[in-house]
Image (cartoon, rainbow, N blue to C red; front, top):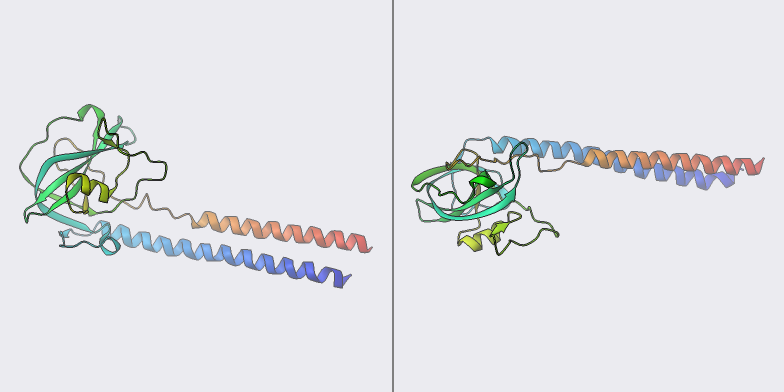
Length: 223
């Protein structure tokens, strides 16, 4: 009897050990990700520094910066929505810095009714956070050639369209023209590891129940 039960017991213990260890690893990953998100959140709210010459996406993503210059009037509108507001767009505009550089500024949200209204010209200061968002998925359609409406932010493509360097600042303070800033935050960065951990722990429980059922059947046959 014990000889027949040895292998199922061994496989049951090994399987549970592996599945539980995977669940524990996901819990550890959850705490690690929470720490990373806390660091990013702290960086987002730091005092802004002058825009650096060559921002590095791997180092400077979310870094708060300030730059003086003026908007060029060249705009890309990206379909967007805000809870409690009418449908509208994000206004991405080329910005000519005082040193001659041309960059992109995500000025924020404006409702559909205000699209096409003239923007005020003149020198201004932009305070915001560097960002290289990856909004597009495999199902995101390309920009509409008739209306000019974009359906996702794509920094390299937008930079090519507006003849700027591929540097985007997401404004965190108003830039005028009735545009509402949509500052960056960590809400779009997922931390799903607790859900993964629960899955592994439940699989371990199922494995244990199946092992117990198999052992009961072996014992019944041996009676």
